[in-house]
Amino acid sequence: MSVKAVVLLLLACFIVSIYTRGNELNNLLFNGDYEFIDLTHPFDNNTVYWPNSQQFIFIKKTEDLGNDDSWYAANDFAAGEHGGTHIDAPYHFYKDGLHVEELPLDKLIVPLIVADVSSKVNGDPNFVLHKGDLDFMINDNMGKPCVIIFKFGWSKYFNDRKKYLGHVDNSDKLNFPGLSGEVAEWITSAYKNIVGIGVDVASIDPGSSKDFPVHKTTSRNGLYVIENVNFSRDIPDNGCTALVLPMKIKSGTGAPLRLVAICPKQRK
Ligand SMILES: [Zn+2]
Image 1: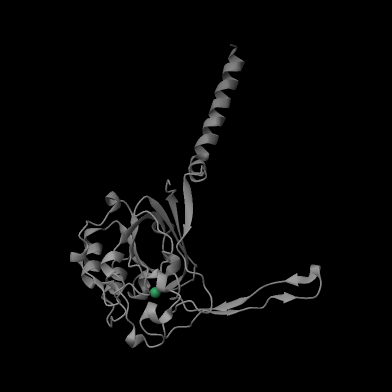
Image 2: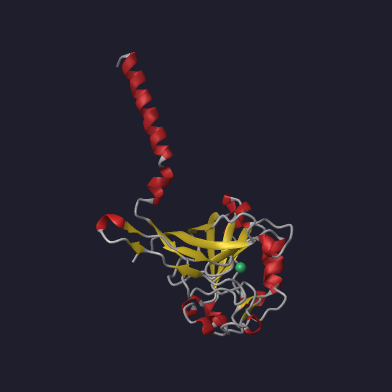
């Protein structure tokens, strides 16, 4: 083989290796072994918002101007920060906490751990999760950054506002399950790698809470909170990656969120 041929061969190998390496992630994501699962409730005029906040208002303004070439469609909406599937930035309950647009992407695209406590909740709106209920150690993703979402089994009530919140329009009478302050203290002190905590109910504190200890503890420790997660589909309790991508509202205390999990396909 001539020197020129060897040089060309080496160059070809080099280009192929760069191409292969550059596509490793895409090859992995799109080889049919993974699926993208939406954990977001849709936003419309019935989406659950906190009783005293701006509810989601969708103003339909589609226009058909009369012939095929003149179709035009665009709508308006208005909404509070904290309703439907959404994120709470630490600033929501801590004045020195990050605003929503300041949350770094490397804390928003992270491994997802699901802690399914729905069998303990068993549909009881008065259930409060205590450390003693977690008879399994929290899967801590071996100390690497992750978000943990507690599944109370409440997503299925989302379209029944009274059942989901416990009361339709009075924030003093809300009644749904949540975490205890004790669990929040435990997670934020023992699991420093957990960057955010989610729930499939309207608030991470129980509906009856008046002083919001879980919000205060998570905010003070720099964790974000995800509320109203949509678990209409089962997902593995570990092995998925969460895409926690809120609307980038400048100085926002929270924001509507498109929450997606990239999960290994379940073999049938
Ligand atoms: Zn919120």
